[in-house]
Image 1 (cartoon, rainbow, N blue to C red):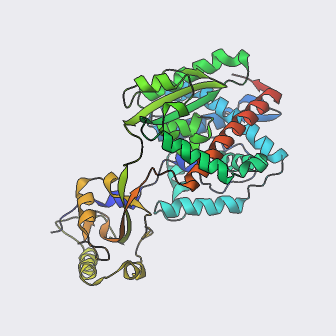
Image 2: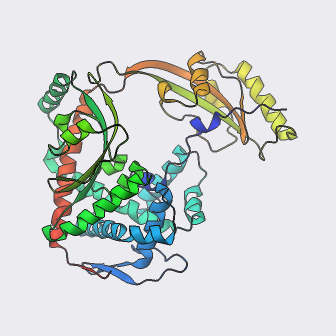
Image 3: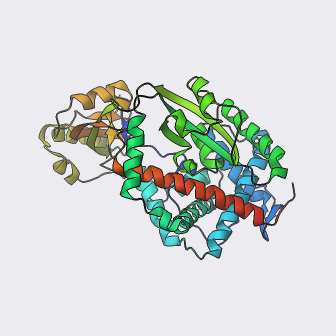
Amino acid sequence: MFRLLPLLAVLALPLAAPHALAQRNAAPAASGSAPAAPSGATNRILAVVNGDVVTQAEVLSRSRLFALNSGVGTSPEVLTRLRPQVLRLIVDERLRIQEVQRRRIAVTDNDIAEALSEIERRNNLPSGALRAQLRGAGIQPRVLYDQIRAQIGWGRLLRQALGPLGEISEQEVADAIANRRARQAQTEFLVGEIFIPVDDPTTEPEVRRFVDEVIGQLRRGSAFQAVATQFSQSQTAVQGGDLGWVTTQQLDPEVAPIVERMPAGAISNAIRVAGGYQIVTLRGKREGGAANQMSTMLSIRQLFLAFDRPLDPQAPTDQQRALVERAQRLSQTLRGCEQMDAQPRTSDRATDPGPVRLEGLNPPALRSMLASLTPGRPSQPVIAPDGVLLLMVCSREQRNLDEFTPDAARQQILRDRVELLSRQLQRDLRRRAVIETRA
C-alpha cells in the first residue's frame, strides 16, 4: 500500500489563468483580428473603430474567457452583464493595434510561438496544452492570441515612444533610493489597483456605470487580479493590478485617505482621479517599512516520475511499484543538484521551479520538509496520485525581498514614466478615433 502526501501541487506550478499569462506571453495566431465565432453566436457588428469592425462573436468569446478565469460563471445573465465592459476593452485594444500597425511595429508569429513555449515550459505543460485548455472551455484560442498580440505590440510601441526618457541617470537612481530610505519608518500598504480612463467628458456617465459594474463583480467574488488584468488600463494590469508596498505619498491624493481607512481585503468604491476612475483593494499593512522584511529564499530541484495511470494505493501497478522503488534508491544515492539535473526526465515538469520563498509555501508539511532538508540531499519520496516526487534544496539564503536596490529604483522610475505615457497615448487615440457603437 502506498501512502499519499498532498504536497505535489505546490511545486508543480499549475497553469496560471490564461488572461494573466496573456499579459506577459503569447501564442500563435493567424493574421487578422476577428476570432472565429463560438457555436450559436452571430457576427452582428457591435462597433466600428476607424473602419475596423468588432463583432458580437468577439465580445461573447472574450466575455466567456474573462468569466471562466475570474470565477463568475458563464451563464447568459453574466455574459450579458459583461458585454458593455468587454466591448469597451476590445475597442481600446483595437485602437492600440491600429497604432502599432501605423508605426510599423512588428509582432511576428515566431515571437508569439516562442512565448507560448515559455508559458507551457514554466507551467510544466506539454506543447499544445494551453490551446487544448481553451478549446475545452469552448473558447477559440485566437481570442486570447489577439489580446496577447495587442499587449506585446503596445509594450514595444511604448518603449519606442519613450525615447531618451528611457535612460535613467545615476543621480535619479540615487535620489529615488534616498527618498525610499527617508520613508522607511512610515506605514506601508500593499495595494492593488484598477484604472478605468475617462477619455471624453461626454462619456463619463457611461464610464461610471462601467466602473460600478466592475466593483459589483469584485464584491460578488471575482478575483481582483483577474479583473485588473482584463479591464485595467494601467500598466500595472500586467501584474494583475499590483502596486506593491507603497506609502500614502506614492498614491493619488484622492486615493491615499481611503486606503488609510480601509480594512484588509476591502474593495473601494469608485474614486475619481486625474484621467479617470480608480478602484483599489488593500491586501496588507505594515509598520516601519521594509527595513526588516527578511525572507528565506530557496533554490530547489524537483524530480517527478510520472505514473502511467492514476494510483490506486490498494493495488499499485508494476510500473508504479518500480518508480517508487527507483525514487527510494535515488533518495539514498543522489548528492548535489547537478546529479539531480542529470537524471532522465519522465514527464514535462520542469526540474527547476525558480526561486522559492520558504515562508510563503503551503501546506505547512511541505514548508517543514524543505526547511529541514540539508542542501544537496534529496527528500524522501513524496507519492501522489499521478507520480512520485523527489525534492532537493540547492541553496538557502536570507534576503530582504523589499530592499530597494539601484535596479529596483530604475525599474520603478521607468514604470512610472511608461504608465504616464501609456495613459496619454490611449487618451489621444480615443480623441482622434471615429468610433461608432451599435449596441
